[in-house]
Length: 219
Image (cartoon, rainbow, N blue to C red; front, side, top):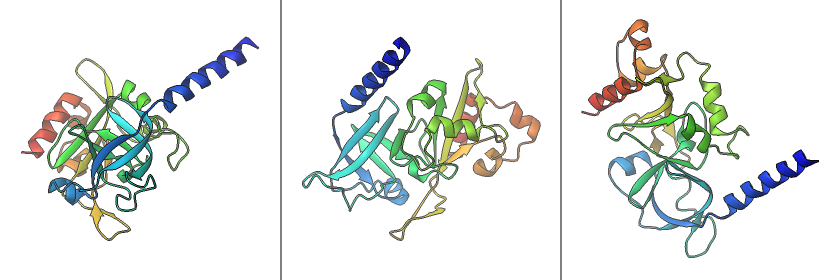
C-alpha cells in the first residue's frame, strides 16, 4: 500500500512539474538553408512546452501568437531561436525521430554537433515520439551498432549527434530539402566526416579528439 502511495505521489509531482512550464515566444528557421543563410522568420510563434532543460526544449504545440491555434506557416521548423540560442529539431534525425524536441548544439559551422552525456540523455526524454519510447531509449538501442558511444580522456561516455548542413538529404512536404542529423558511430565516422581512419585508429578516438576533427572540418 505504501509503495502504491509513493508511486502515485511521484507521478503527481512529475505531472505538476511538467505542467508548470510557461509558453515561450520564439522565431524559427523553416529549413536548413534558412539557418545557414541566417534567414530567420518574421513571425513570432508561441511554444507550448512539455519539458525544458538547459540543453533542450520539448514542445507540445507551435502556436500562432495572435490566434492561439497551430501555426501553419511555421509547420515543423528545422530550428528555433530563443534568448539568442538556436535549438535544432530532432524530427530531422535519420537514425531515429524525436519530433519537436529541440536541442542546443555544442559545435557550430558546416558540421553541427551535440554531445550527450548520460545525464543529458536522461533529460532529453520525449514521451510522444513516433516509437513510443524516449530519446534515451532510442539512443540505447542505437548503441547496439558498432561504437554508438565514445569515451572522453577521463572515461566519461557520451553519444554524439551530428549534421552536415551542406548535405541536404531529407525531402520536405513543402518542396525544400533539409539536412538530417545522424548518430556518430565508429562505423559511420569515416563516411560522415570524410575520413580514412582504420578500425584501430577509430577505436583510439576520444570525444576530445572527435571534437578536434569536427572543428578541422569546419575550417
